[in-house]
Length: 440
Image (tube, rainbow, N blue to C red; front, side):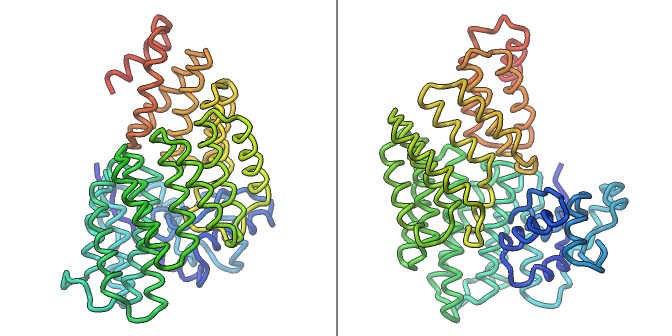
């Protein structure tokens, strides 16, 4: 059944002010520490609140928000009463106000974009609608792009990432190509001012990386390589070191998945050079993990361990205001997952399973795709470590998650696990998993 559109939380957006979503998420985490709460707030969570997907926060977030904005109620922050959210019916969801009567052109664009991206069970209508949102009623590229067009491209990047977290890439990729073409057409048209053109370069480049990731996760490796190269070219033309580091990070990841570990190492090292002046230890940590993955693919244990040590050292320096918004996915869970893959490459599957289990346990449930990915990694590691019953249990959990998530990458990984488990099919648990996997 298609999901119903959400009304954007404009009140909360106003409270964020000039802070980026990542900067505001850092303020939320700091406020939580002040009152002894623990929340996993990141830019994606802020995006979910502002899009209206989160109509009322859980109790931990409620305490934090009320601490941050003393004297205000949840209603003042743009949230619905808890009892109304719990008792919401499908009919009420259908008739919820769309927000289309906002007075400014920018507000209309943002509302249409967000509602389009959140509509539809497969979420593909969203990306298809983006190009019309960017072009306006005339459906033509403007002679010069303005702030509204730049903001729409930026919003598109955020919404694609949000939907990928929840649903995986397979249902999004086919419809994402047109918005990307539109973004580059806007860039070719030029902008009304230099600051807007800079935003368009950064936004189009990040959109190219995002669409490249959708292709990557869908198993369309050549398409992914093309999109990543496009993002890298955009970064080089505009002198955007952050975008360049992002493109190289994804290119290193892709090269590893394509069985080109030496290329993966080179791309990760190039990304590190681009990132060295950005002041983000977390970005350097991720790039070190990408490099470690390349070394493990070449069975170079010493170089892999050295890169892992650098990754942990940089990660231990903590988050920074310079951390790119796209890195909101990179926490301890992702670190554990990437290290798990290194040990698996080196043939230490029991050790890899320990890291994969920790990754799955640490992951925030709203990152449904990553929960499925880490659990699939765990299942494969357990199967290869000689624990078939545990592997079958983890594989069954992945099948549960794949009812919501569509990812060719995860499905391929699970198919490999099933093949490893075939010799153990006489075990009732393994047999049940293999039967269910075959049906799926």
